[in-house]
Each structure stands twice: as C-alpha cells, then as structure tokens.
Amino acid sequence: MKAFVYRFERKLGLVRQEEQALRHELQVVSAERDRVLEELNRLKSRIDCLEESIRNHQGNFLIPEVGLCKEYLPVLKERFLQMVTELQEAEKRVESARQMVVEKKRETKAFEKLREHDWQEYQYELNREEQKLIDELAMTSNHRKIKAKGM
Image (tube, rainbow, N blue to C red):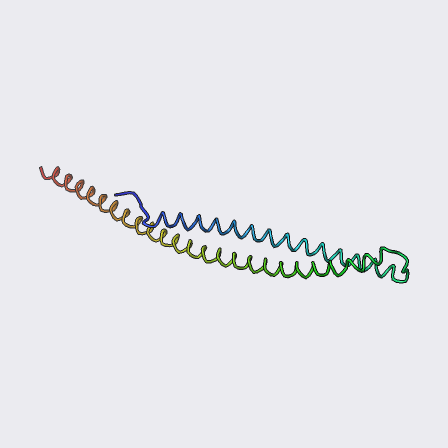
C-alpha cells in the first residue's frame, strides 16, 4: 500500500507557524504591558513618597525642597494618568493578541483532527489489505494441503 499522505500537510504546517508567530507576538505585547505596569507602580510609589515628604515638612515653609516637591507632584500625577491610559491600551493589545492565538489554535486543532481522522482511515485500509493478503495466503496454503492429500 502507498505511504500515508495527508492532503492538508502544508496547510497544517503553515497554520502551526502562524500560531507560533502569534504566540510570540502575544509574548511581546505582554512584556510591553508588564513594562508599563512596572513603570506605573514606580510612579505611584514616587508620588506616595513625595506626598509623604510634603506632609512631614508641611509646617516648615522655609525648606525649598517642599516647594519643589509641590510643583513636581502635579507633573508626576499627569505622567501617572498618561501611564494609566497607556496601560489600558496595552491591555487591549494583549487581549486582542490572546484572541488571535485562541482562534489560530482552534484552526490548528481542526487540521490536526482532520489529520488524525485521515490517519485512522489509512490504518483501517492498511489493516484490511493486510488481512486480505493473510486470508489469501491461508487459502492458498489450505488449497495446497488439500491437493497434496488428494494425490
């Protein structure tokens, strides 16, 4: 019997490559989101630290550092709001990439299931042909025995 050939082997290979590329893209956008989240946490801790510093020196108006902190705080808060927006956009990109990976995984599984079905059919046909050959050999052998006894 001829060797097993899956008719969609190339397509399956391409779909697997596309899935790998999408997984890589998901890793990239996830890393970007994590970077934004880390920067957001640093900004939050910096803002908290500055607010604490301002509270500690609230009664002392002579320290120029307090004035600088008060002027710098709105800048940090504005940057914090920008980073929150950037984080939301990064989350959307991650979710979009995740959806694309899930869809491509479904497509890959469909082609793999078709391949498995074709493989099962091939195995069934191969077993049928082998059984047919075995039956023919058994009949030939039995026919020879009968012929040998009859002579």
